[in-house]
Image (tube, rainbow over the protein chains, first blue to last red):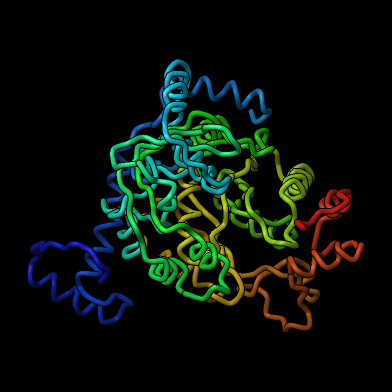
Length: 73
Length: 382
C-alpha cells in the first residue's frame, strides 16, 4: 500500500473472505487495496453527481461574448 | 453536462477591476521575486482553473503526499508537484505569513501568500516523479538545476504574461461554455506537441466516433531543438481542421504548459487538466509524455488503472499505420499483415523529409498540412 495515514473500517467477515478469494485472481495486492479502489470509484461518482455548475449566469454571458468575438461560436 | 471540475471546484484566482488595482498598488510595496517564464505559466494555470483544485504552489505536506501517493492530502488524484523554487538569498527577510510579488520580464504578474518555505530532496523528487535519477532525463536534469528551497502558498494573478498566442488561448471556464454552446455532452481531449500526420488524425477521428466533440489542445511551451515551432503546429492544425473535420465536431485552443516528460505520471496530469477544461474523455497514446527509453510504450496507459476516481475516461490506442494490403490506415487490432506492408507514421521521418526540402508522402501527411509547414522558412526550433 502507498504511504499515508490509514484507518480501520469494518466489513462482514463473509464479504472479506469473498474479496480475499477474488483478490488472488486480480492484480490487487490485498483486500484493503481492492476495497480502497472500489470505494474511490463509487465515492467519486457520487461526488460528481452532486456538483452544480461552477459558473454563474453572468460569467457565462461574459464568456459567450468573448467566444463570439474570437469566432468560436 | 461536461465533466465536473477536478476536486469538485473550478478555482479562479484572477483579480479584476478595483480589487486588481488595489492589489497591484500594494504589490509594488512588497518584496519582489523574479520568476522564470516557465513558473509564470504555472501561476497563470493555477489562477485560471487549469490546475484546479490547486489555489497556489504546493505546501510541504501536499508536496510529500504527491510524491508518495500521487494524490493530494484529501485523496484527490494529483501526480505532478506544482512547486515554486527559490534560493536562500531570494527569501532573505521573507517569513511564513508574508506576501511577495511575483515578477516576470520586469512586470509584477501576481502576489503570493507565503504559507511555507521548505527544503526538499532532489533525488527523491526525481526518483518518484520520473522513476529515474538519471540526468539523461530532461525532467530530472531540470529538477537538479532547481534552487534549494520551495515556497508554498496561494497566488492571485494580477497581470498576464504575454505568450503571443492569446488569440488561440481559452481557459477552462471558457471551454466549458463553448462545449455547452455546441451542445456537446461528451468531449474527448487530445494533447499534442507536434504537427499532425495521418496517424494523429485517425486516432482523433476514431476517438470522435464515441463522443460528441473533439477538443484539440496543442501545448505551447518550452520545446526541444528540432521540434516544430508552436506557430507551425497551430497553422498545421488549422489546415487539417478546415479541410478534414466537420466544423461542428472539432475545436482547437492552446494550452500554455511546459512538458515535464514524466511519462505515466504526466499522462494522468494531462488528463486532469483536460477534465478541468470540461473533457469527459482523454486520448492516451503510445509512450504518452515519454522521452527516450525511460518508459515502456504503454506504461502511461497502465497507470490509469490506479485511478478509478479520476473522473475522466481515458481512451487507449495502439499505434496507427498505413497498410498497403489493407489499402488504408489501420492499427494492429484489426490489421493481420506483416511489417513489409506497413508504413509507420513517424514524426522523425516527417521532420527529416521536411528538413531535406522533400514533401512527406500523402499516406503520411495531408497535402494541405504539408503546404502550411513548408510555407515557413524555418519550421523547426533552433
